[in-house]
Length: 140
Ligand SMILES: [Fe+2]
Ligand SMILES: [Fe+2]
Image 1 (cartoon, rainbow, N blue to C red):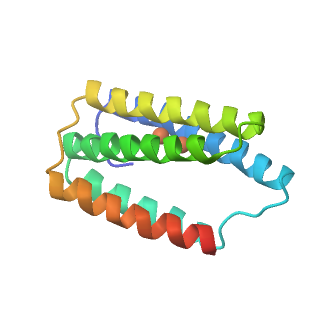
Image 2 (tube, rainbow, N blue to C red):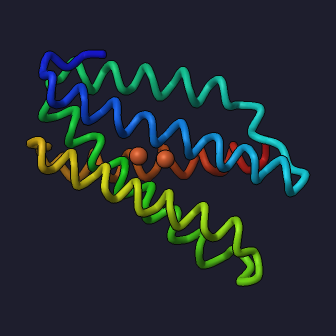
């Protein structure tokens, strides 16, 4: 929505399409297991859009830097799920493993397109915010 570069727009649209698939796979799996998604989902979507627009306003290279750092952190988060998921739950494990590989490839794409490395306090703040979000999402 904020980038003027057709290449960046096309690559991000492709990544976004994969994110839609992630939501579909996880939504279906959660339903199969008799669970439910977080009641705070509208807040996550709205917040993510707002943060994305802010990052976009800082220009493509910072925006891509934010994307790369986000995807790396999501990849690490999914690693922790792979460590905790029961070995016998092949379906869930396959979904998480595929998402992890997609996220890391989104990070690589952002770097290839010229992502700037974020200052480390920003990465730390993002990690802290993510901890709050995942804790809340787990409970609500
Ligand atoms: Fe994803
Ligand atoms: Fe991603």
